Amino acid sequence: MAPKWRLLADRLAEQIRKGDLAPGQQLPHIRELVDAGEGSKSTVHMAYKALESEGLVVSSRGHGTLVRQQAPLKRLGIARYDKAKWRDGDEVAFIADRVASGRAHRRSDQTQSVSLVEASPHVAAAHGLPEGAPVYARARLVREDGRPAHTLTSYYRPEHVEGTRLVDPAPGPAGKGGGFRVLFDAGYEIDHMREELFARAPAAEEARTLQLTPGEWVMELHRTAWTADGTVVEFAIGVHAATRFAWTYDFEVPDSAPGKGPEA
Figure 1 (spheres, one colour):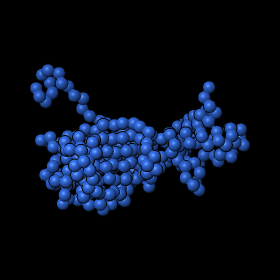
Figure 2 (figure 1 turned 90 degrees about the vertical axis):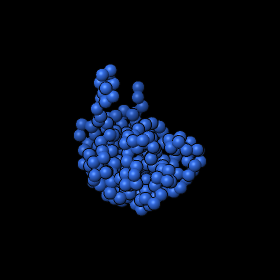
Figure 3 (figure 1 turned 30 degrees about the vertical axis):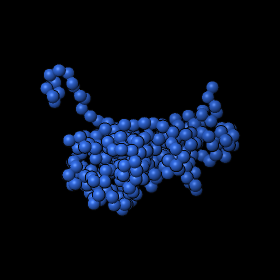
Figure 4 (figure 1 turned 120 degrees about the vertical axis):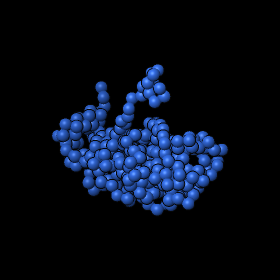
């Protein structure tokens, strides 16, 4: 049989999913549930922590434990990189996610630092460089509704970005269209890319940066972007709070049967 804290957490989770506990509603104080016979203080505390790690509630000092106001942010796949957004318009990828999710966005939602660093084995392999070669690291922390949601660090060869806005550490996206537009203006148009996803437990520093609750995992993203001639112009590593995103991919189904497809 499941422990008492798990049974309580499941019962409250069902009330949240059914709407009996509405978004923004405060859960009973721990003492109230203890007095109602739901278990000890530690039992109720563990149940609330489980709900928080599952993304159903948020806790804050002075406000108690509240049912989450919003569903997880849509993290678009292919659609977030539509060239019409960044090449012909002024939208960047993380803003595209917010537009699709019906959320507000502010320039201050993204802060960043830029530095010249030695390429790690992963970065060096992606760019085809010797390990330790100099690369620019553009590290961003992105917030959603004031709360850290994910980090993303893009690595560039110096010859691709020196003299561009991509080495400017000013807060916010790198101008209209973001980094892909900067690369496009420098003569490096993104033609195709690959994303790889890994679920894992966070490192201690990641848990602090993203304000994760105990037991909350992260999704690690590796993104590689190429030009049409096969030049890698960006390799990025992102760390996302897993419960705060819903990953969405919409794509055409390939048909590589003989006589079909673009090579036919």
